Structures are given as structure tokens and as C-alpha cells.
Length: 271
Image (cartoon, rainbow, N blue to C red):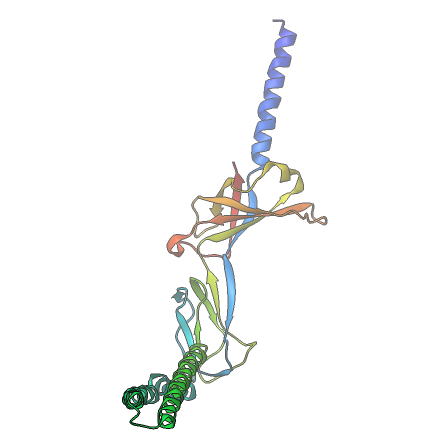
């Protein structure tokens, strides 16, 4: 091989290495930010005065955990009334006992009528009373079913006065306190879901063909968190920002036990 040819081979190899290094550098070292999975400004399903706040800033909460209660004395009284009505079986028991008595009377009257020992119209009267008693039993059962449904509705109304967390997360801020009035558009607490966290990064549009959902990347949070973690791409914007010639990428970063906080800068490298 001639010296001139060897020189071109070395230059070509160097350029290839430089291009590979440049591509690796292009896909790494981007600024990013680690954000909560979601932030919820939690409101109330009912209007009223806050009786009790059950969480404070920085508290961890789970799905369904009560965070506040509205004053509910009137609703509790209505529930007690509804429970008494729903549990009442007196009218049903009376109707059933009456039917049993009339059925026995009807049997005796039927026996006497078959022997021509009583008038036919007396049997008809007894059977009519039996039919009426059966209708009264159906009415009593219907009214009890309505009472049970009223109880369920009252329980639901009372439950609406307990504000519960819809997510697992951390209380960022209490927006209202005991004694304050809550209406339909008022927010009570702000809760952030911390696991998984989202990593948000904007990349030049030229990198769009190189990335796909499911790929992994290295994320290095800023101090004082530090360290290196693996995140996975879960969303790639399909609409570019023409002004900056960039597109957004969202990655999911597992954060079991709320290991590190959200709202922190980071650096990201794609493999």
C-alpha cells in the first residue's frame, strides 16, 4: 500500500471516529427537568364549611385517604332517620301476619261453603280481604325498598362531604383551612404524584427520526440529588415548535418511596 493511500485510510478512519463521537455527543448532554407525574388541585363535591383538615404540607397520601371533612351534622341526622326507616319491618310483618290469618279463615270458609254451611258471598268477602292484604304487603315492601334507597342516597350525600385523595402523592400546599367556606370551584389542597416522575426534554428536530417510544436514556439529576438513573421514553411530540426548531420528549423515571424530589434540573443522554 502506498504512503499516500495509507494516509487517506487513516484520515477516513479518523473522520468516522469523529462522526461517531459527534453523534454520541449530539445525543447526550441535553438539559432536562424532572417534574411530578401530575399535580392535582383537589376540590370538594359539596358546598359547606370546612370542619377538619386532615393533612398538612409535605404529608404523603394514598388513593382514597381523607384529606378534609366538611361540617355534616345535619347530614348525619338525616342518615340516622333514613336508617330507622330502612330497617323498619313492622308494616311488612303486620301485613304478613294478616295474610296468614285471612288464609286460615279462607280455608275454614271454603270448607264450610263446600258443605253448604255458609253463604257463597261470605267466602267472596274473605277472599277479597285476602287479596287486599296481599296488596298491602306489596305496598309495605315497596315503601321499605324506597327507604333503603333513601338511606343509600343519604349515605352518598354524607360521603360527598369527605374530601379524599384521588392519587398516591405528596401534599404540596394547603389552600384552605378549618372554618372557611368551600364552594364548587374552590380548591382545598394541592397534591403531586411522585412515582413515577416525568423527565421533560426538548430536542432539535433533526433527532426526531432517531428516537422511539420505549427507548431508554441516562438521567443525571442536579445536586444535591446527583447520581445516574435510567428513564424510558413514553411520549414523543408529533407537533414541532417552529420558533425554536425543537420537539418535546417525555420519559418515565421510577421513583419508589419518593426517593428524590421533583422540580429539579437534570442532564440526559440517549443510548
